[in-house]
Length: 223
Image (cartoon, rainbow, N blue to C red; front, side, top):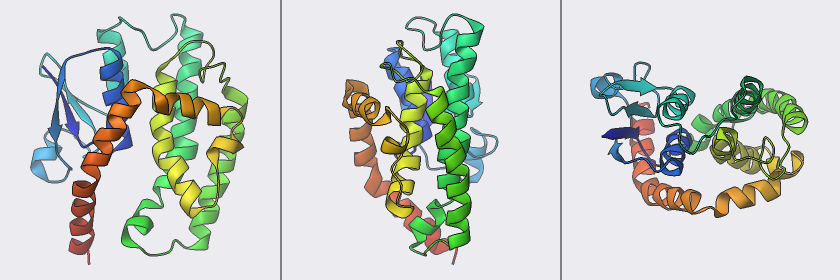
């Protein structure tokens, strides 16, 4: 059976989980927070999530896992049939990850520790985000889906990228991705209302107290 390794508070874990549920695949979840030899045996660079395939192979990196699931289980496809269309979907995913999610992820250590981020760090994040927002406004269609009239992997991926990017930038940088990227607000509401997204959000909320306890213990151990 497919096994998804990680935890429900992780946005990248949830992106893979959404793909699994969308494709109606049978899988089990292995709760693990990372760190130590056990996790490195599953994920070579210690990143969440990882996947054990039906054949027993171990995979890590979210987009690698998502592409594997698409290639192996092509029913209910999440990429266009043509190469150019697939590239455009992946382009949106990459821009959202590199220019929206990853810059804001720099803030997590400050958020979890309760220490204010230096203004220079905030300025650097805003600078990168500005490029990403400009690119997303050029690339995204929201008609009604992010890459056009068909639901694709980009819809799933950007939805979970926003779980970090929109939260951090909204609460700690005073920005609103849902208004700065034209069309994203209505699209985000549609994504959030889906049965799969609601199930994943319920699991995330259920996991959050345990995850925060883990983070607090980890931060205390770093002092």
